[in-house]
Image (cartoon, rainbow, N blue to C red; front, side, top):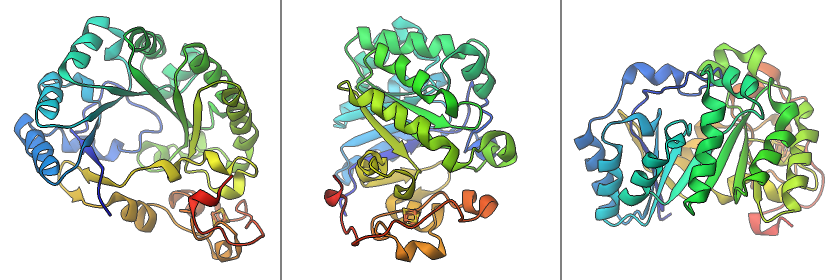
Length: 309
Ligand code: SF4
């Protein structure tokens, strides 16, 4: 499979401390050096990879981020995405500098519809207002802005309200990602991880709101058996073949690792019509909650994402 995208972890320092942070256990690994990151970029580019997602940790708090983005542009990356908590991009001057350096996609995290909720989840007072400002700044500068919202117990009832904010600012694409119960989310499991079945009506409502507009909605780590009539919004079908370069290891084909090590299937999945294309949930969820919520869907087996209507 031809890898199209490099998922480049620049390190794990962050100016948020989210209650659900999936990489909180990696914080002590610190950050990569400028030269290490440039080497990662060069090696992947030499193998024909044309897109890079700078991720972490928080990429925008690095002093060398503009130099790194500029380097990625110079060596021929076409798509250069910053995956960010959005706080630094509240400064319009900084937005302009990242764009000038070569960033052309921004994926911003929004986890609440009001400061009290977003700031509670991120444990960062003022973060909500900064995120909203960052979206406004980037849209005003004509940038392609997507967002990611981690679905948690404190925020799931407000997913439609979060969606309304995104529609108000004409974000072209957003993802609702069911929390991956690793790191802080595992430590805070009972406070953070909702029942998958309880979340469903709020996901449907969010998709319904988006579908009246041009905004594209996607839902991650929420298998097909919960998405009756909404199966085509499952985001796994859109994830390009991805290589991961972490701080101390690399994964040449993350698709396989995600499916085989990160996620899992239940004993009843073989009876489900989506078994051949479904990745199942992140494995930590059924470790805690079991498989009772996952009801196999009857019918002829679906063999390809293209068969989803
Ligand atoms: S294969 Fe399993 S997890 Fe996937 S949709 Fe079917 S029952 Fe749900």
